[in-house]
Image 1: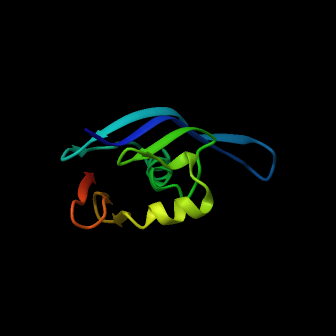
Image 2: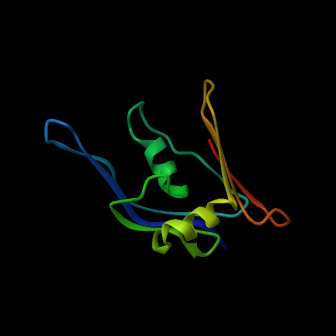
Length: 115
């Protein structure tokens, strides 16, 4: 079962001088339970932005984000705040970055490691 599907998510930013930067091009991912993934890219490739779209401290410009079968991008601010209580994300900065994402209600937590 897919724990975290991202369906066509994209994110861009408008710079003060008026240019738009496409940080995350439309991306579709299916992160399965119990699987380790590697997101690889050069510094500045906005991999961090893609991961932030998973928990939605930033909303994508387009596309949908699901965690544990629930579409987070369709939730109101209040509903999203409640849903985030069951999603944990931990970033570790070392020679390699390691991100741990937890989704669940405590008893049946699923851990997804992205290295």
